Image 1 (cartoon, rainbow, N blue to C red):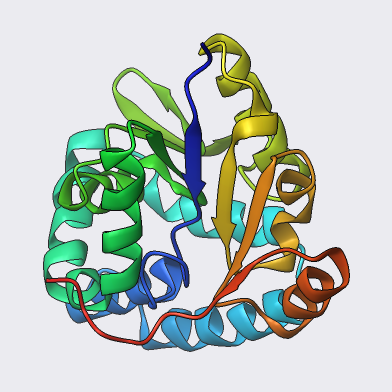
Image 2: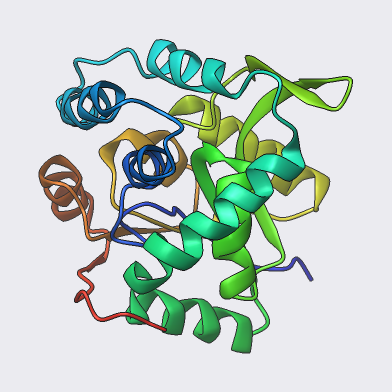
Length: 223
């Protein structure tokens, strides 16, 4: 019998922070980036939401800042980011929903366009073993500042999920996917149980049209 998987997006689904903006905020507090970069990041999030921004170009510009750093460096940074900024924004309802799936014997997977090192501390806090994110190129133990394409975003996120499920012998027709974003429509359409979670306006409209469940979480922290 095939295992059942529950995919969860991260930003605005598990946490109510935007991990990209809040991580840049922490980097600014630590003196690692300029105030100008922080402000630019904020406005680019708005452009992203309006579908004006080329997400891949934006991503590459930001990860270029990591050139020469090691995965261990970014693991420490991500742990600090989670403890200081993200932990208080984990939705209690998301935490409880993850537990409910685990209690049913389902395999929970966090899937996000965030880099894998940013997903890792969230996954640890939720006791989730599996996560899929955007991968960054590493050579000689350090980041090169380049992406391993495609981004785990849009059709790329769907392709990562389909590939992962095939390797795990999991039938996506039995799978759940919780996300807030219309940009995840490609993956929502291939799972058997799509759930619009804290959805943006367009996803809420699409969910109603397609008869998908809609969940809205209160900003009550899990921890």
